[in-house]
Length: 311
Image 1: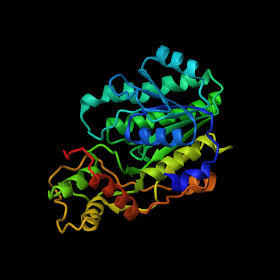
Image 2: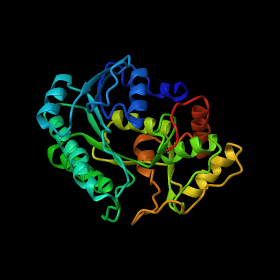
Image 3: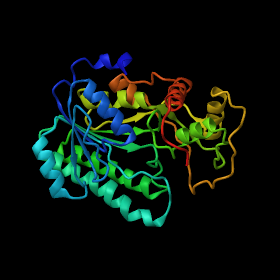
């Protein structure tokens, strides 16, 4: 982290920064970066997800679906910057996910936006997803909820002058990611001489390393005159999933190839590649890690003795 974090100087020093979903994969890395930048970090997460033993981060348990509760917490902290990452995340298409996604991802976001309108915060960074459909047709309850939530975020900027920016994150990977996600699952399988099982593997996605995502989010939180903008954080290039896993196996010196067709492709699955042009022009952001370098860093972390096991 020290190789790039100096670019921010004292931009965050002393600022009160709220991070929702602070114990998630991305939230945890963002929290650590903000602490290193001398921000006053307040982590919000649901009951049962909290880690209260992180020096430099004050943690609060709050349910974002409870408007009164989030208003109380936000009014007490009075943050300068809010990063909204809390989200229920799964690409499964099960119908029993419709209501939980609606409540956690959409209602939770709207409640936070309402609470923020009562403050004089400098910036709210609403974190979206590459799964949000460009054609307006979501292919999962998650995609539908995130798309609707980001539409509300844009509305709060347009109508209520809330200083919101939206960050669409593409296929993020790196150390500390959940073991059932594609890259850690594949790494852990290969480390145990197991063949990663995939669906067709034909989907083309845009992989981006976690530290590039963190840099982008930090810039989105402090860069002036970008309110209302939507930033796509990705490399701008795509690779088939099966080819990415094959590259990973080759890098690890493993001659096996991923086994495709074992799992079923999701209905309506689409390719997605970022358009990072706005992020470059407005933030001066572009990825510093190539896919090969990011995978190398990630593999090294798991080889160092991570306790996670493959699914």
